[in-house]
Length: 70
Image (cartoon, rainbow, N blue to C red; front, side):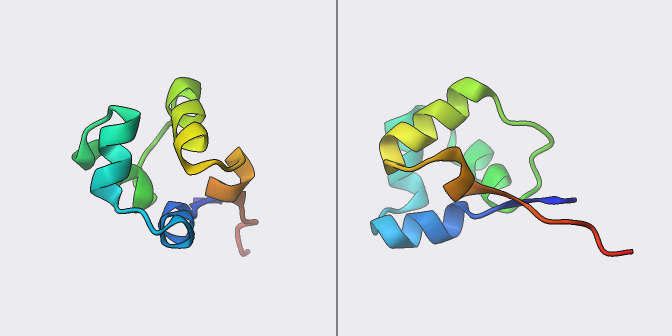
């Protein structure tokens, strides 16, 4: 996949746990974990909006385009 999810790095920078973020955003810990590990197939704009609001960041802080090798 060419989109990398940097949620774990942002969480460390903000000194916030995945559980705390899930509670603040209002999504399940399981769904947030799927996103964090890069296994999500899609992200709703409303979810991305809530993540950015709670983490006080920009979408580019969470999602990064990485060109595929080959």
